[in-house]
Structure formats: C-alpha cells, structure tokens
Figure 1: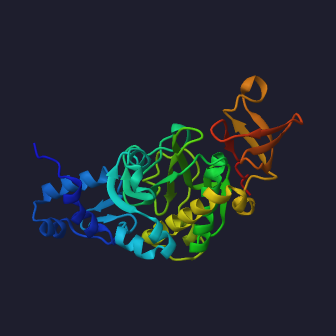
Figure 2: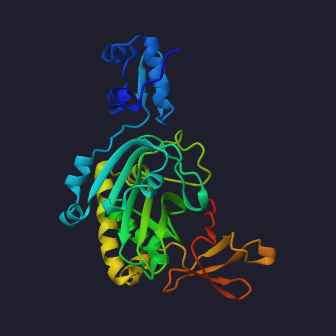
Figure 3: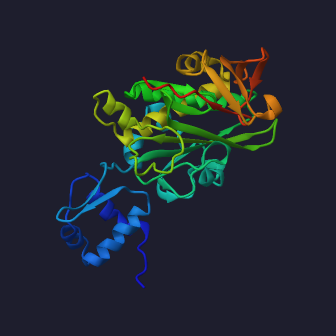
Length: 343
C-alpha cells in the first residue's frame, strides 16, 4: 500500500492549482515527477483537506475558486507599527486540530502571540459547535493575550472583539456588516464569522485569554455543504456589490491589527470605548428575537420578545412578550433573528 504523503510534500500541487485555471493531469503529473495514478491519489489527499477541486475529462483539474495561501512575512509587513512592535510571535500552520486548542497550550511568555491555520480538523465555535474549516478558504486566527490582572469587564470582551473585527472589515471594504449578540459577524441574516474566547487564570490574579476568530473569506457552496445555517463570505458580499476580491493576507493583517489595538485599550478602559461601535453595528436592537437555551419562557422552552440593546456589562436586554425585562449573558443563551420573508 502506498503511504500518504505528508502535508508539506503536497503543497507544490496545491500551489500549482491555486490560480484556479484548468491544468491537465498529464502536466501536473509531469511537474511532480509521478504517474497519473499517483497524481490521482495526491488529488484525493488534498481534497480531504476540504479543497473544492473540479475534474473534467479533456480539461484536467482546477480549484473551484482561486486560493491565496497565508504568509507570515506578508502579514507582518502589513501590520501597523504598533501592532508589529507589540506582537511577540506570529505563526502560520498548514493544518491543526484547532487554533484555539493550540494556543491554550502555548507558552504564555510568548504573549501576545498569533496563530493562523490554513485548515482545522476540529474547529469549534460557541457552545461546542463544529466550525467548518476547509483549507485556504477562510481565516482561522487565535490570539493569546495575558492580562496582568483579571479585568473586571472580562465578560464584555467578546463584544469588544466583535466591534474591532467589524470596524476592521468595514475599513477593508466589506459592505453591510453587522454584529449579532454576543459573538457573530453578520451581513443581513447571513453569518460571516464568529468569535470564541477562552480564558485561564484565577479570579483576582493574572488572566490569560485566547481569542479565536473564524471568518468566511472565499468558501464555496460545496465546502459549506454541512453548514446548518445561512452564511456568506467576504468575497461573495463584495461580488454582490460589483467589487473585486480582497487578499486573505491583507484581511489577516487588518483583523490582527484591530484586535491588538482593541486589547491595549480594553485592558485600561474596559468596554466603555467600544459601546458606540457596538450600537453602530448591532443588528438586533428593535427587532423581535427568540432566545433559546436560557431556561426562560414557558417550561424553559424559550423566550420571545424584542431586543433592547445591551447593558454596561454586555448583557443583552430583552423585553419579553409578557412584559418582563431580562438581562441575558453570553454562554446562557443563543439568539435567533427571524428570517426575512420572501418578497
């Protein structure tokens, strides 16, 4: 039985296909110095990474969408001087189980440290949900940051991260951005990205957080076949507005820049500097919502009402249909926005 090649050995094939043009199997096999049968096995291996590869007789192979691999040198060069000076370590991995998992076990002496991955084999979102992580299609970033003391406003950090990300993406040219409490980046009712924050430490002492950000950049419908909710991507949103694609490396730098700057402010001033930003991007306030998983409502079945913004502690305020006013905290509830009716 032929032994599967390791990831690094398969990168020349990925890079040959990256522009998205048709390439014959004969040409790809010749470039790799292998037989057509061996090439087919290599194609199968990289398809297992989540790459969306088309194959047609007489044409050969191509990627359904062009691919721009991440490059740590390009990301560093695009960072603002303050971010480049603050960051102690930046790594780009090919495939990991989860960037958050890797950073949770990283040496905190290297904080602030950032890890991007081209793919995750066990990506996860809020409340343990799977996060679809195909190779080279999106951004998977985890940033390790150590606070010298446990911030009193730590519960609002996911919201501050959301404001930083939305502001950065809007500045990079992504139209229609919104935030859905507590941790979703949205365009309309479609999910564009999400935030997962995990922490280590004891209350009153030092605190280390790992900030995980997943952003859909160029994911195809085939790659998102198992996603169980409406979604969109940066490139799809821009294409709908007649705009050209954005660089993944440029987006990676923009997000990292914004989150590092936000953390510097947050550790000194808490959430206060970001309240206006949240209100600007908030897509729930004034709309009917349903809250699940909180134990509220008839027999704990869920709560229906109108979202009324957030309080000073980052809790979602909901005016329930029975007239009661609730302040709901991240981790206890999920928020579903109603799907717009067809015209």
